Each structure stands twice: as C-alpha cells, then as structure tokens.
Length: 83
Figure (cartoon, rainbow, N blue to C red):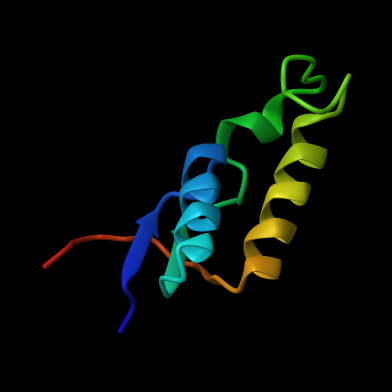
C-alpha cells in the first residue's frame, strides 16, 4: 500500500514522485516503457534550469536517479485500470 501512486514516468511524473517523497509520503512510480517519456527523444535540451545543455536521455537519467535516491519505488508496468 502506498500513499501516492504516480502513473507515468515522464519529467512531470518523476517530479511529482520527488515532491511526494519530500513530503514523506510512500510513493510508487509506474511507467510502461521508458522513464523520461518524450524528453528521451530530444538530442539537446537547452531550456532546463540549472543546465546549459544536456540530452533528453541525460535529463531522464538524472531525474530517475533522484527519484530513487529520494526513496520512491519504481516499476516498469502498464496500468490498465484504476479502482
């Protein structure tokens, strides 16, 4: 049982997981394909605060590392329903 389940592991979902963990909630982050979402297809990201330039894959890697370091659990699964 988790306090919060985040469906979707793109930048918004990973940010939600990070903030939920900072609020001391138990968190499960579920992504069906690749953590990072659409940003992983970007060869160059230049508008992300704190970084002059990095690839979408680098950004996704840094985000998921932070999610894990904060203590959220992650799963690669497809969500087919919510009760």
